[in-house]
Length: 273
Image 1 (cartoon, rainbow, N blue to C red):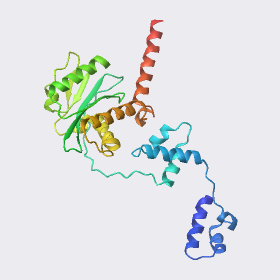
Image 2 (cartoon, one colour; image 1 turned 135 degrees about the vertical axis):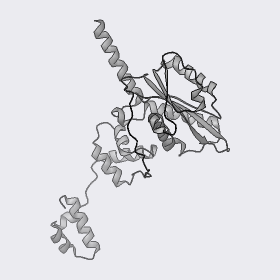
Image 3 (cartoon, rainbow, N blue to C red; image 1 turned 30 degrees about the horizontal axis):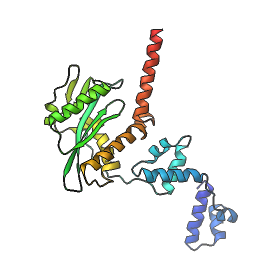
C-alpha cells in the first residue's frame, strides 16, 4: 500500500470488518481526515467521451478507443475503462502450432490481395454469401459484396472491375474453392492457393472477416439481402476511413495508403530533379 487511494481502500475494508476508524487509520498509516476524503474526478469530460465511444463501438477495446482520442494518455483511458467495467469478454480458443513457411514480403500496396467468402443467415431463413477482397499491405477493404450465390463468373466480373479501379496486384491469395480455381487471371497476376485445410495461411482476410462478424454480423439482424448490403457498405466505409488499425500505427487503411502515395510522389519529384 503506497498511494493514498490504496490506503483508503484498506481503511474501508477494515471498517467493513467492524473495526473503529481510529484503529483502522492507525494500522494503515492514514489520518482520519484523509480517510474520509473523496477524490475528485480528474477529467470528467474524458470519461464521458470514453463511455460514448464504447457505446457507439461496443466491440472496440480501450486501445482502439484511445486511438480515436487525440492528446490523451493511454493509462488514463485504461483507468476509466476498468472503472466503468467496459472490459470485453473473449473466448479462449485453442491455437494450432504451425511451423512457419516462406513468406511473401510486401513493401507497398497492390502487391498482394487476398479473397475469400463468409456466410450470413438472414431473418427470412435464406443464406447470403459475402465476398471480400483485401489489400494485404494497406489492409484496405477493396470489396465487400453480398449475394445469394457467387458462381465463378460473378467473382471474375467483380475482380475485373477492381482491376480497372485499383490496378492489378502481383499476387492473389485464396483457398482452393471452385470459384477461385476457375478464375482466369490476367498476365502478371499470380494465383496463390493456400494448402487445403489451412485457412490461417490466408490470415489477413480471415482476420478481417472475424472483425466483420464481431462488430456487425453478430450484432445485427438482417431481414433481406438489400438490408445486409447496405450495412456492409457502411461497414466498409467505416473500416477504411474511420476505424483506426493498431498494426498501422493507429492510422486508418485509407490514411496509411495516402501517406504511402505521398511519399512515393515526393521521391519521384526528388529523382526527377
